Length: 108
Image 1 (tube, one colour):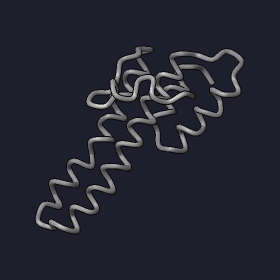
Image 2 (cartoon, one colour):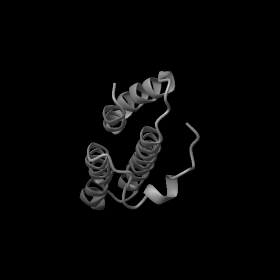
Image 3 (tube, one colour):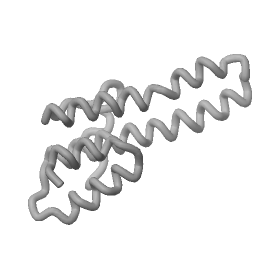
Image 4 (cartoon, one colour):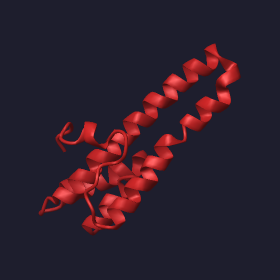
């Protein structure tokens, strides 16, 4: 798997992230590009889990705002698509909103 492919697959669900991570760890030449996108996609997945839990709790408390919470829950999907576009362009730009926060936080 090429570095670009590993970076793109990292954004496609948790299974894609695991596949990219295993391929990255088994490769002889560790690419900073792949590591950067693995970190960014992990940050997006953590945000997705947090938003999902918070949305579930808040919908239980305020059911009248359910539509708003479901729209906000689409944010991780948009961030993943932006990450895929960035990875396919061979660029290392942070994902909006959370990209700067997760840079350098995880040691892969």
